[in-house]
Image 1: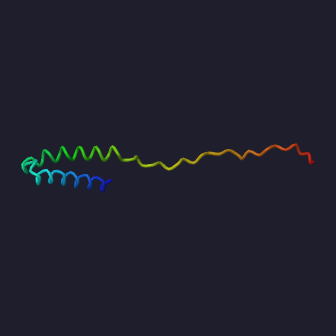
Image 2: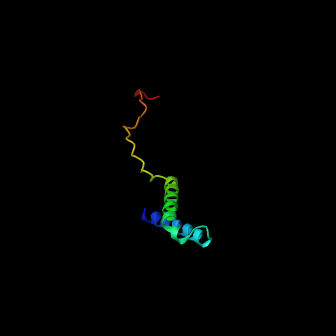
Image 3: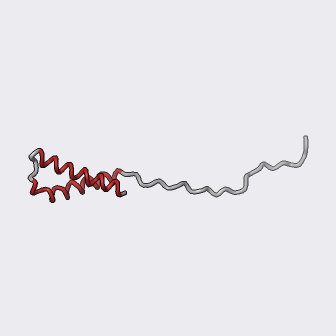
Amino acid sequence: MASIDEHILKTAKEVVVKFIECGRLSPTGFAETFQSVYKVVDETVKSRQKPPEKEPEAKIQGPAHKPQTSGKKS
């Protein structure tokens, strides 16, 4: 899970840095904007993750069913 968290952190940082580079955000607003962007990216990624698949449970099988024979030979 740490790998996903690292990717989320890097993505949020890059988004905010791009906002600063484009002039849409002042560097003084980094902390507040970073928290907002991080939260959105984190929620989006984690809501899209598939839960870990469980191993299929072993099915309990009873004795094999064999057709009954009458004992007569034809």
